[in-house]
Image (cartoon, rainbow, N blue to C red; front, side, top):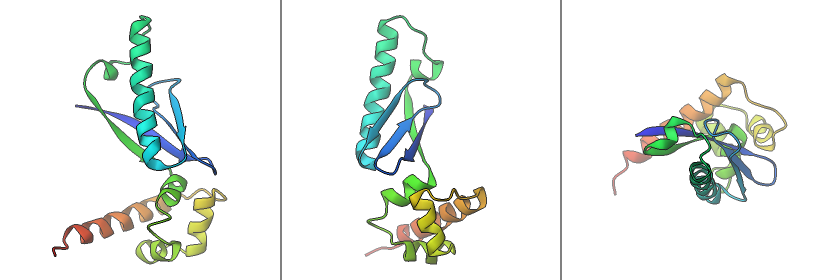
Amino acid sequence: MEKVIVEIEYTGNNYCAYSPQLDGCVSTADNLEDMKKNIKEAIEFHVESSLADNDPIPDIFKGEYELEYVLSTEALLNAYSNIFTKAALSRITGINERQLWHYAAGVKKPRIKQTKRIEAGLHQLGTQLLSVHL
């Protein structure tokens, strides 16, 4: 099954999503879950409308595909702010809490090295949680 990339960004008030593989298809929502639902529907509508109008669509959309969500650091930090405090993220990533606040607010954009540290810290936490058995 083909993977369709969906980029999700945070605009300060809501989330915005688009697929670089499908020009002109965007969606917004107040939260991440609604954003995933909205962009899925927007892509399906865009593809169906294009086919009905005999407009060309990328080959990836002619067969079965699944959406792969890629969140900006700002979107990730805001989407999970009710689950992870910046202090907790600082402990698992080794990144200064104040710096994380700057990333979440969009004041500063993290370097690739910093985004990899955030990703690695979250993956390590996920691995630890998957090993828990009650």
